[in-house]
Length: 138
Image (cartoon, rainbow, N blue to C red):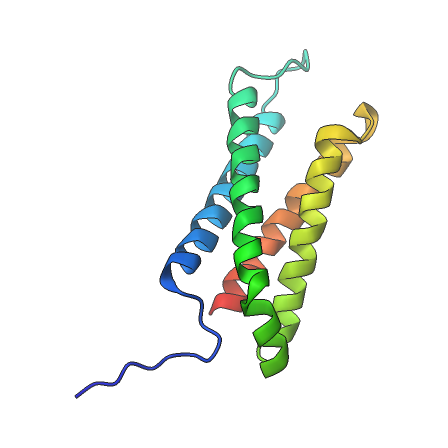
């Protein structure tokens, strides 16, 4: 006879799938967009893919905000009370908030001359957040 072991603060399967799918989509779209930007021709004009990559990344960010709301409603408060994986959880949450704000800033607030630098920082933080999310999940 086997017994099913459950963790005290485990997310339901559908929430795990939502978080994982949104994180993968967000990271993949961000990396694709960065690659497209790095391969830009000397004229500086965007490629034909750029608007589609921006839409994919924007849609993924909305899904990720929804997924974060799912996690914030129960998983984060319970994790803080249980004192389980607090450092990685707080790090991922802080990075996610920073990414949401920097993504908004890139879309609406950042002056054009600062755009490449802020975008590169945003991309680096996104990769770091994905890696920390994987480590938090372990």
